[in-house]
Image 1 (cartoon, rainbow, N blue to C red):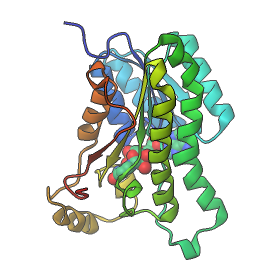
Image 2: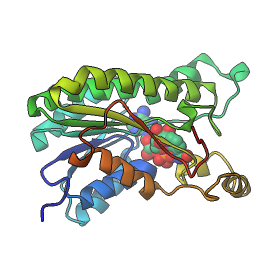
Image 3: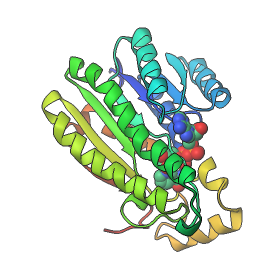
Amino acid sequence: MALELEGRVALITGAAQGMGRAVAERMAAAGARLALNDRNPQTLHAAATALEGKGAGVEALPGDVSAAGDVARMVERALERFGAIHVLVNNAGVLRPTAVIDIEEEEWDRVVNVNLKGTYLCSRAVLPAMRREGWGRIVNFSSTAGKNVSTLGGAHYTAAKAGVLGFTRHLAKEEAPYGITVNAVCPGLIDTEMVRDTIDAERMRSYARSFPISRLGKPGEVAELVAFLASDRAAYITGASLDINGGDLMI
Ligand SMILES: NC(=O)c1ccc[n+]([C@@H]2O[C@H](COP(=O)([O-])OP(=O)(O)OC[C@H]3O[C@@H](n4cnc5c(N)ncnc54)[C@H](O)[C@@H]3O)[C@@H](O)[C@H]2O)c1
């Protein structure tokens, strides 16, 4: 039996670690060829080499998703190598915990540009290729922050992740006639470097105790949802935001 993403090419941003890397591993196991982006070339090449070792076709594309020139170059390179892009996972994100009273303009721009503008730039860059195929899947990383208030991040992070939800709905409506679905995932607290770099182990345990399912989520659990949204099985889901948070946000 053919693997679910056999013949598909997936471009995953922020794929060197955390959930982006877990999505890359899950999609490679489902037969996809991978165009992997990250702004950190060292960790990106380590991740790409590990996946190639498991037999996946991988192209490493270092670059900043908030820089239009980097995005254009990485999409061009992915198309040169694979000839098509069927799946885009807008996973790259940055979080800062600063309170509004202390947020410098430069930090505001950085957080909003990576999380929100990067999602727009990468989507815009892949749409012509997806329209040519008459088939596409875009999965955007929002957060419980996008629906409520960020647990660890500041208002810039909350605002950017809420913006990702609006962008997702709007783009879904525009691209539905071309066979392209656009959805968002809203993870709760997931055990990744982003969280470990922001809070200590005791605070992680304390948050875990406060959730109905009293632990943090695992990157692989989110990757499972993203892989489903990227598959043919999710053909009638578009413009949606799917919660994956251990019951932290029951709305
Ligand atoms: N971990 C959580 O609890 C959580 C919860 C909800 C949403 N999210 C979101 O999920 C996504 C993945 O988070 P994670 O926890 O795996 O993060 P992480 O920090 O562990 O990994 C993020 C990766 O993105 C890369 N990156 C950052 N800025 C970039 C840029 N401008 N261009 C290209 N790559 C860039 C980093 O180098 C890193 O490899 C992010 O969008 C994050 O906001 C995380």
